[in-house]
Each structure stands twice: as C-alpha cells, then as structure tokens.
Length: 120
Image 1 (tube, rainbow, N blue to C red):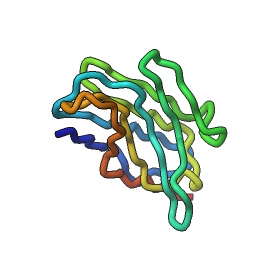
Image 2 (cartoon, rainbow, N blue to C red; image 1 turned 90 degrees about the vertical axis):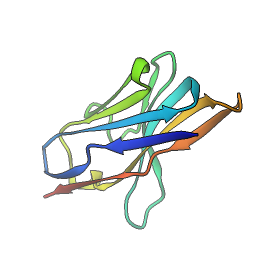
Image 3 (cartoon, rainbow, N blue to C red; image 1 turned 45 degrees about the vertical axis):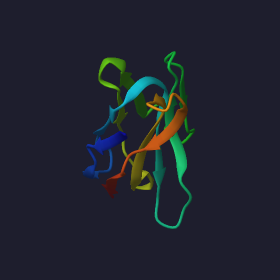
C-alpha cells in the first residue's frame, strides 16, 4: 500500500513564502513523475508544477519564476518552494506521484491536500 503525505501549508501574507513537502511511503519500486496541483474554491484542480524522473520541470504560467519544484529521490519526497505569494495562490494544494507499486503497475497516487492561504 502506498501513501502520500503532504505538509507545509498555512497562512502567509502577500509576498511571503512557504515550502510544501510530500513524502511517498509504502511498497514503492520506482517513482516516475511527481507534481503539485491546486484547487481553489469553485474552480477546477489545476497543475502547478511537475518534475519527471529525469528532473525535467513544468510550471503553470501563473507561478513561473515564483515557485520551484524539487525532489529527493532517496526519500521519495517532492517539494514546492513558493515565493512572492499572492492572494490568488490561495487553494488546497495536492501532491501526486506516478509510481510502480507492489502490483508492478505504474499508478498515480494523490496526497491528502494541504491548505495554503495568502492574505492581502
């Protein structure tokens, strides 16, 4: 069984920073891409950033230059450093990972979500 546990959310003022972490644990045999999504009230979930197994990154236009995704493969952990936060960044942030589990199949798993609130 695989679990993704996200942490690091909170309340911050405009212009501030937060660092999110997401650790995958359980029967993991290989991790492919990892990423972060967010969902604001009344809106669809959207991709924030992703990183492939080969460290290629992809960012939403709205966060390019302010957010940085990174990963520690030894710990099966993905991070999201968020700088110069804006009120429109307020959302629940979800991590995900595409990985090979004990069934030998690649599946996408999701974390439980962590709230990020940016006050103006």
